[in-house]
Length: 422
Image 1 (tube, helix red, strand yellow):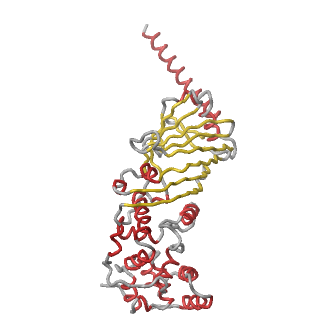
Image 2 (cartoon, one colour; image 1 turned 120 degrees about the horizontal axis):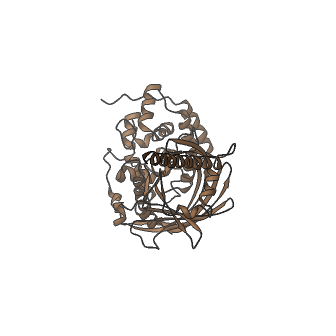
Image 3 (tube, rainbow, N blue to C red; image 1 turned 90 degrees about the vertical axis):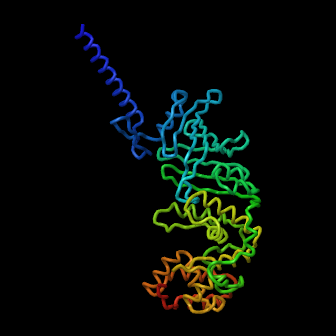
C-alpha cells in the first residue's frame, strides 16, 4: 500500500513539474521577443527569460487574459499596482495607491500621490484610456483627470496624455497635501498639462499651460521693509551694471514673468534628459529669493512647490524693483559672503555702485556656483571665460558699442584672486 501511495505521489509530482515546465516553455516561446524588439527580463522563481514587451502588453490587454487579472497585483518601483476588470466598459484598470513618482523638475526625491488610476482599452496596436489622480479624502469632483492614447510598435510605445484645466489648488492637494502653506493661503488659477512619452527610452515632452495663477495669505508683504543680515544694502538701481549683469546671468525674462518661467521650465526638462548635458535649472530670480528667505535649499518636491507659492505672491506684493533689491542684498557670493555690497568691497575693494562693467559681469557669473567659482578663481586666477562671455552677451539695455567694449574687457579681464578669510 505504501509503495502504491509513494508511486502516486511521485507521479503527481512529476505531472505538476511537467505542467509547470510546459507552462513556462509556452510563456517563454509565446512572449519571446523578435529580433530588435523591445524586451525585458522576467523572473519566475529561479528561472528567468526575455519577454517581448509589446507581446506582453497585447496579452495582458486581450479579452481572454484581462478579466483574469482582476484582483491581482504586482510590485513596481512606483508602488503596488492592483488590477481590476471593468466588464461593463471592457476596460482594464490599474490602480497605484499610494504611488511614488519621480519628477526631475521638482527635486531629487520622489513625490507621493495618494491615488493614481489608469484605465486601458486596446484596439489592435492602439491603446487608449484615462489617467486620474486623487488627493487624500477627496470627493469625486476633486480629481485631476484626462485622456491618454498610445501606439504599440515593435521597438517601443509612444503615448500622449492631455490633462485638462484643473484648479492649481487641486494640483497642490494632489502633489503636496501636507504643505503648511495650503492651510493659510488662497490659491487661484488653473493648470493644464499635455505630455508625450516614449518608451523604453523614457524621454518625454511636457507642455504646461497656466492661467491667472495668484496666491494670497502668505504674508510676503512684510518683506517690503525687510533688512538684510548680509551687511549694508547696495541700493543699486535697476539699470546699474551689476543689476543688469545679474539678470543676464540668472533670469533674462525677469521683467516679463509672474514669478515662474514656463519657457525655461520646458527647456530645462528637455535639456536634462540628454546624456552629457550640464544640468540646467529653471528657477527664476524670484524663486531663488524665496529659497534664500523662506524655504531653504532642500532638494525636494515639497520645497520647490512651496518656493513657487511664495514667488508668485512676492510678485504681487513686492513688485520687480523690490524683489531685485532683496535678491542683490541677500545673494550668496562664496566664501561665506552674501549681499552685493559685501561682495563688491571684498573682491574689488569698491562699492557695488562703482563696479566697472567687467567686474559686474564677473560677480554675476559667480552666482551660478559661488563657492566652486571662488575656488577656481583662487586656483587659476580667473573664472569660466565661456560663462562670463555668455553673461556679457545677455546684458540688456546697452548699445552695440557698449556691448562690444564690454565683451573685450571681459575677455581681457584678470582680477587678483581674494585670499581666504581666516
